[in-house]
Amino acid sequence: MDFLLKGLLALFWLVVIPTASGALFFKKNEPFSLAKSFLFGYLFLFSISEVLILLFMYFSRPLHELVLCYGITAGLAAAGGAIRMYRRKSSVPGDFRALRGTSVWLWAAVGFIVFQVAVAVVLAHHDADDALYVAAATTAVETDSIFRINAYTGLPYVRLPRRYILSPFPIFLAVVSQLSGGLHPAIMAHTIFPAVFLPAAYLVQDQIGKKWFSDNKTGRGVYLFCAALLIWFSAYSVYNAGNFQMVRIWQGKALLASILLPMIFYLSWAIVLKKQAEHSWLLYFMANLSACLLSSMGIILAPVMMGIFIVLGLFFVRSLKKTALGLLCCTPSLLLGASYIFIMLGRKWGIL
Amino acid sequence: MKDMMTWIFSIWKLYWDDGFYPYLLLLAIAYLLIFHRKKSGARQVLISFGAILFVFVCPLTAAIIRACIGSDVYWRVLWLLPLIPAIAAAAAWLVSTRRSRLTQTLIMLLLIAAIALGGRGMLQEGNFIRTANRQKVPDTVARICNIVQDAARSDGLSEIRIASDDGANAYIRVYDASILMPFGRWGKGALTKNDQKLYDEIISETPHYKRLARRARRAGCNFLALPQRKKDPHRAMAQYGYEEIGTSGPYTIYQLKEPQA
Image (cartoon, rainbow over all chains, first blue to last red; front, side, top):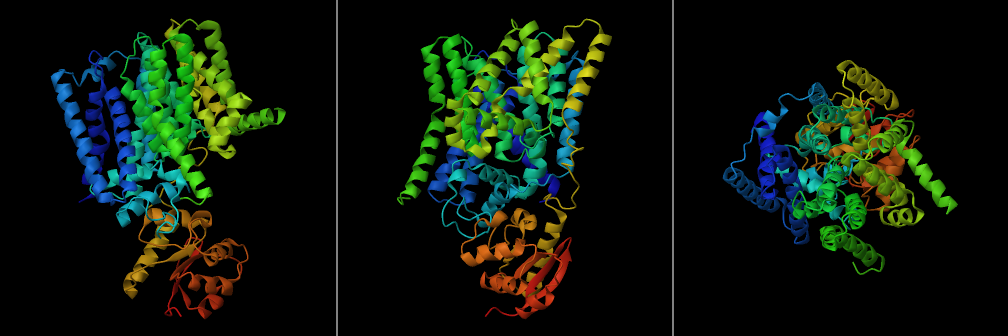
């Protein structure tokens, strides 16, 4: 299969499938938007990936079975979403019509974002952390296994890396690589992921901007343009989220910093801190689960952030039901955090 | 308490390094607080900023989070801070509340200059380079992998096990996961003391090549990619059966030609 066909397959699994499956998570009266559907779709796909990968890893199943299972689940969800879109008579080009008459700054922002994507796709950034994050995917593909073989050496693990097995984002990379006609995971990570996830990060920012500047087109344009500027000029330190977003968007922790945490910020204000939740609570739950897939840091940072907003909700919305629902949405992190401590103590005491 | 606060402040400084973004952030927060605090978006920024900053700074919460994630990555808590929403929203209100297009454009130009001068551009920092290989690993590493694969193919070897330094270790298995290594980046994954000592020897500025070759044979390495040093390693390597088969950038690649004892 040639490179172009693999690229098209990758775009199908990374753009079409998430966008279609995201349609399942709109509330009945919520206006449909392609951008939101794409983002919601990723929350769903990351969530099912976390659950499926942990299950397949626990039962020591080979990678190809996981690929099949993920493909079927994602495909069914996308089909369900497409049917839902059709039944609701959602007008797909609606988002483009809304762009008419928009501020010049929005177009400037789009142009600048396209430039950033082109830089990330055409050029390369060498990050030695790939020794684990990308090599774990190439290893999984090479050996048709899930975290059985040490990515550093290619030899069987003596002891599983407890920090990484609960956040197996590299396996997600391996799965989508396999679904894309066996595209090399390093090519998927370094070329395809930036083309998909950099725009996704800006879509999250645009959702925030759209909310605050709903009747102010100049404001929305300036917001997105400044967001793009701030990210581009983030090379002042190697620690900040903007730098992670630009130079290593294919790693789970970068996705956490640039997409998931801003998404949790957006959802918190739309769900937890709104008297009438604008979106489904399921999205808030899936955001937590998705953060767990992306990085071990997500297991901690996502509930910290959600916890802050749940406490704020207690003050501003004063609804115990919302507090309870919010806490319920944090259960994936709590469960995985407890498992992490259990594994750590178990090893310390020689039980595991 | 004082130590904790000093440590938290050092993390804050580490995160921003020499960028002026924290000042832009504080300016944006002040602007939103003074002129737009009644707007729902501005309130969202201000409340989130205050709450998250409190969690970051408060010694109790900081101690709890530090215990969970480790002190070396505590700076990641600052990822929660709504930096982009705060500065971008303040800029958006500052511009969009002016009626004249000319004034809007002038303010935007000032903002662009402030952001550009307050930070550092991605290309300016040399973050991105061109590579000749599609996997986008360093070209020297891709060449090492291709050389050893060609050599293994022509000699009918079914397994390749190569040892190298961190410059290559980090990317060899990213490029080609069929290649095995006795250890990875920073010597991680080494199963035996011999493998660990082999790593130490390879990264040493003045390696003892005879010892290195002996350990490499013991580790089952049929290939080595050694960074070039002042001392000529060829004689010592040949004594243990390793012959040079090529070079790639600063690396000399050796293959074990004699069957292992």
